[in-house]
Length: 331
Image (cartoon, one colour):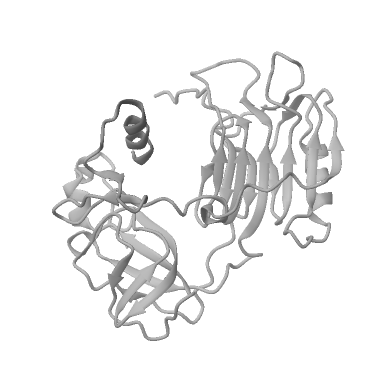
């Protein structure tokens, strides 16, 4: 919405009533009566927006296209680069795919920091593109980044209730029951869990299989930037209102991730991803996502496939110049 407003301003001189360029050159925001506003997303993406995407690290392994399933060959190359030491820049190296088609009957996994999977191009008409074609019938991410078993390590830290009756959309601070044990720089999870009142308000109690309290949650990874009494300030805005009447919220400090931790500096670039060799919209027995990210900080510039699917534990990913030709789900 912010982008649209700025584009409109440049194109025809129109201004938005919700966000505009202030006298100091920064964006200014209008609040609704309940405090909601368009969130400030200036800190999203790789390096929190302060760092350009890195140059591709040196190629350590090259994989050429062959007929048949290439899952094992590419995964072996990924594992080889993942076994190399991290360099001072936080990277190990690049797996380079040659031009051509690569059938993927299984799933490619990048589970170590500092690994880049790079293709030779995206232009299918020139013959220079590296295209991953998902075969088989399993519904999956073709490329999985991170670990599905990694989770925040909450050991020794208790949940603390958010004391405000309502934390509005776009807020970067809120009151909690106690800030004892919390300090600037601590990473916390901000949690909202649905209750029956919220389910009823959204009509989900009327379904044949109605939602249950706790079925829907929102967890937001934040870093404490300031503390004033029992008021906590965080590094990024709250993106969905937290209201006591609809379940309230909590914060909980955590110290790193379990099961190998959250990986960083992983890239997937210059590739084409395709689900099935030919179009078949009614067929749902196939890969649903090109890249899935869980417990990782990643970047995916210039991929001709859907933007990454972001699962829990993902922090500040970048998806740039991604193009998609979606296949609709049926039924």
